[in-house]
Image (tube, rainbow, N blue to C red; front, side, top):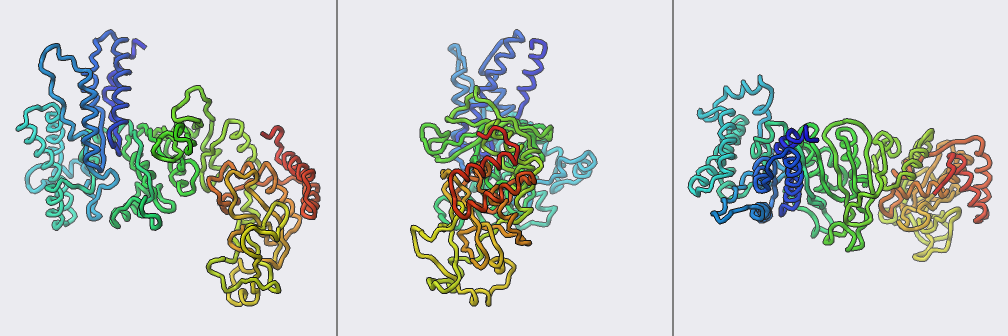
Length: 608
């Protein structure tokens, strides 16, 4: 270690680290403390003097950056960094050294937006290939200077500004830096013929408001080297422009929302109503240089929600996930990570490089990381097979993960037999088709569906019947004809803590299903195949499997579609007979036989 200590120390001293939602600066201060510990140890190994103040000054000037949309938050972050310096400053009776100027390391702005009036304000050619640079450097901006000259002056002015204590010189440098940046923005507007935007931008700057943040321009010294080495933080979360319960929505302009929906950077964040934490993950990855490290804490919904599936897929295909720390506890205020937020969270550490498909995941039962807990060794290749639509990262231990892998070997997904449909009668939209007239055709609701049978005793409401001729006269879709077939039906909503989440049985033809019922139907109406599938789906094994991927009380069709089905001719007829008899007269003894037979079909020796 002694041989490499100096080299490692120099590398750490050059690291660039950013928190794109810096808030009060807690994560930057944490990184500063880690840098001090690490560099102090390395300097001791090298036999060099350890000066914690100098280490901190170098880290703040060379390494630490932050952006936040709130002016007050940025000012607090500056204060915290200043305070961390003061505690290590040894004056020895002398006048204290002036504090560094952090204005151009901690910035106010919208981290997610780099456009104004749908105009990109940064020209990527300004830092392109040598040929592209040569062309751009020949273009004068307002007949004053080339892009390269302005960039050079910006870098030097920032370095001088950081250490300047003279107020007059500080103001001169601050104005110069702002002016140089505006010149570049104006140049891009000129190139696009957007002269009318000049005055608007000037007015915003005078009012010290800026609804955009041009990362490559504000932190030019970082991006000339390809981006940041490390992105850290706890990005905000919340649905953007949610239409219901608007009190907890994040409101943005239509132009900003359009950017989030159309910009290539944010494509992986799409899925349902956009949650802003997904946008921050996308932006954080974009800010990293190749092989840079992402380390963020955000809602655990990232691991399993269907709305985050595109983001998981993007990360699987473009990043190396080093580890995930999962904190599922949300109810116990003394154990959840953030006491003020009733939310399960996770920490994602990933490298911007597709090195391999392995990843580690560990479940924590408290607010702190317990290093003694074992990791679950996973592979994104397996996860793509296990859950090809959602790319879910299941919350399981190693034994459970190995079982998930086994269940997906040499099996077919249920959707290859039948997709899972929602009942054909919408109880809200199709009221004219049903009522209480018993002479009509039965209309099955979710509460009536139980394991192995249909009940006519329901706790709320009365049994419903459908006016079949009227319904068929106005509906001719293929789905409206499914009543002609025998079907496997299931409850559409079940309690997340119920012993059995999957409650299924089989119904004869000439029965209709309400939209609180999900169902499966075979094109060839093969009764034996339905019985075989019902035995598999009602088993304790598949109920366990479903629970590992369901994140709420809905029995979602895509989750049912994804269930792996094993065909086995050796046990097929035996299972069909057991299920047929169970439908006639269910018993616990026969159910145990079905469960055990399904374990044999999947070749599971030791099940939980």
